[in-house]
Amino acid sequence: MKFSVYIVVDKIEKFYFEAIKEYEKRLSRYCDMKLIHIKKGEQLERKVNPNSFVVAVSTSGKSISSEELAFKIDHWALTGKSDISVVIGSNDTLHNEKLTLSQMEMDLGLKTTILFEQVYRAYRIINNHPYHK
Image (tube, rainbow, N blue to C red; front, side, top):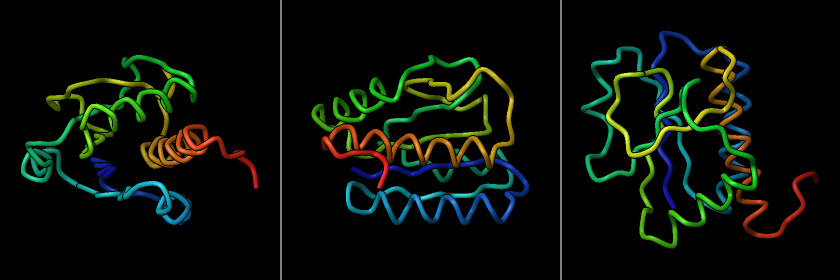
């Protein structure tokens, strides 16, 4: 499965990039998940693959558990949705599904880091692997 995570924000703190890089490395055994940093919202439409299944992350989306996210990712794979675009920081994006990581507002770098961690956790659940090393 291929995940493209688009974050629309001017600046991301370095420590978030470092954490995300670590999760990209851990996820590489399960899927291809890459961060794409976009500074201007109008660039987003040109970047997102039109054939991709688009998931918007928002404070008003549907809240799900880690196990439900694992089921959702597994279901996407089984139904042929192998190219997933996740959009963080743009409320105007056309999307197929909307999810929330929390109803609380938070820094977009933190929200993106949490997303990467939760996708990693989901793949550990899908493969019946313990989460902690």
